[in-house]
Length: 181
Image 1 (cartoon, helix red, strand yellow):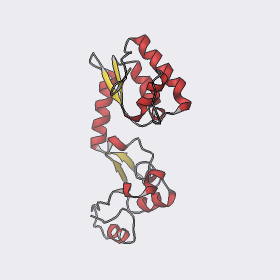
Image 2 (cartoon, rainbow, N blue to C red; image 1 turned 45 degrees about the vertical axis):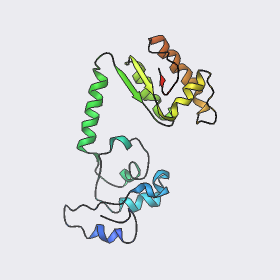
Image 3 (spheres, rainbow, N blue to C red; image 1 turned 90 degrees about the vertical axis):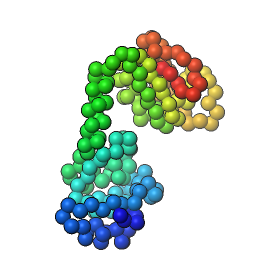
């Protein structure tokens, strides 16, 4: 176990690993450069490894240094067994859903979920939206959202999604704790 993910003491630890050895690095999220995907930070991370395996389904969508940046330097860059299991399940569940089919989508911004929402609206009986992105849907329905994060440039699209959901019969429900579409 290394005390950091990049430092002068981590490099010799990585270099001293025996064939097939593994060095567990400290959490990359302690570094602001992780989310910003700063080039120097990415290169330092990548220099410690020979290949990249992502087995964290819940964070795979992030375009950060440790999830996307290092894949430019490390080959192979592959999904792990758990990631594959999650993907297989998800593809099967969406391709041949059991009815009634409900989906829950969360996140801070709708813009990163546009494709998912569009696809699910074609298949679901109930779409439950959560996280910070619900505020754009609240605002599109005329509710006050105070100083909550709203992607103003996506407000018209949110309205379109709500109209499509209503046409399909999976809407409306009043916004209480979640926004149902």
